Amino acid sequence: MSIDQTATTGTDVVRAELVDHLSSGLKTAVAPDQDLFADGLVSSMAAMQLVIHLEQTYEIDIVGKDLRLDNFRTVDAMVELVLRLRAAAAKTKGQ
Image (cartoon, rainbow, N blue to C red; front, side, top):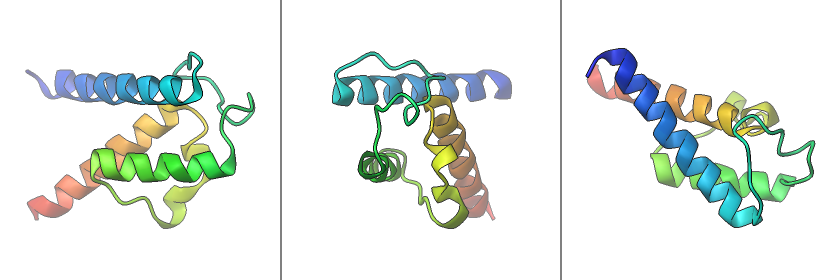
């Protein structure tokens, strides 16, 4: 599998898990590009639960500047955050 295929597969897996997690929890279908806050689906308290879910599920630490609301506004934004933080953690472990 090429690097591009691996990246796409990782993206697809994380996106599918997050859509499923949110759809189950909210009891409504969630689109990957749907603004969860603008649509009133996620409150600030629910956002903190999302932080915990992402940290535990993907073994990442979300701190400092990464705690911006925009990183949790859509599933796609969360996928980008997870993949970026996982890549940074893997790079750090590899050094």
